[in-house]
Image (cartoon, rainbow, N blue to C red; front, side):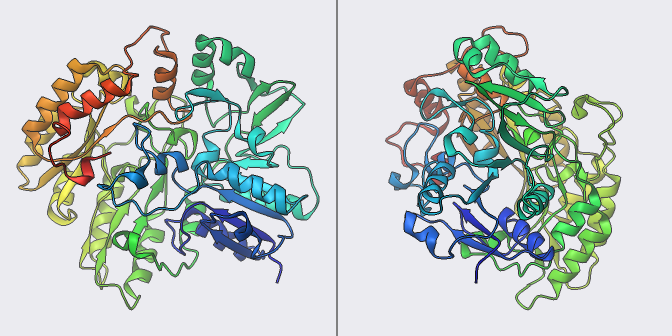
Length: 511
């Protein structure tokens, strides 16, 4: 049997709504296409086992960038670190490797790129692991088209056009290489300009958005990004109710019965690029759809009564749909912060027959949380601790992170009254963090005594913080900022928090 579409993925495949390839596979099959999946190939011959697809190969490194997956922020191989118990077998730069294999064995086959690794390399980008600027990944891979974001609408349109031998130009939410410049496209600084001027690199960063067409000159050709398609609640409802078996591998057993409530994040954290993939506007599923999914889960023979997680990128952004303007939602007075829809959903969900407990294990934005929401969560939805991500305690570093919202001490004091515990996520060695700020963070963490994770900042493509790291300046103001570049200083900042290297450390802190 020849498949219409064959996905090559750098991570494990499982028929579950938490697996992006699984959603695309189910959706394509619902629309009449046959789909095969080859997971985690490590040899070029392994991609030959399903033959030649009639339409195209869909290539993705997965939900996590392969270089982030395989290397620590200090560029050490995770598989060589005995403390990490790292068992992944993912190729470095999987997207490029898989494309080269397809070009070698399936000459003439169409290639469609997707996933985090490809999506965040769609323009000229700083590569931390090589410490240089690289051209857009479409030039490295010679793929036909790149779909960024979750890509359900994109994949259906791409499949239809390839089936009908139609041109791939103009598909919303995709990128292609072209020689034409559309009248409505914003022209980014060219490859030559950003490689010669860090100010131009900042200009490029400031222009990034998924709401407009963008184009960038690379030598004598252009890469064009077509603006993202509009996703609606009814779209998400249909995707997450596609009838998955939900069988998850043992590594993800703790999330087998997780339910996604929404997409997007309005937080605008500078070290995160979700606004350039899923978007900065919240799109919430309907309450009815979420409750139906939970009811389906309760009928599964191996369900024991607990919903593992109910949430999204930030669990308490459900119901904060707006999209009325281009302002930063987190600072906007129009934003509905009431949590009314979310609290109502939680109450109805926990009343479903067969449900013993519904946990919220995704992090929440404490600066948005209301008293009513916190009471509901503290009483009914915490497994061990409620997770929040202050990221730092220095006001200057927090401002550079765009995380200087809310009053952490007030929130902790208020939450203490619930009798439940908090756990915290922090980051060190971010641009703006010198040894002074690292010492301040270390002192505060010792007082808290419950830091779930403290990570060293890793520059990843397209984020504002990565632009700061590469240029040494705030891209919005062009003012110089301090950046801890050397491994020695990054290690020193880490030691302030983790202790001396000879000390036996908990493996979860060895990031």
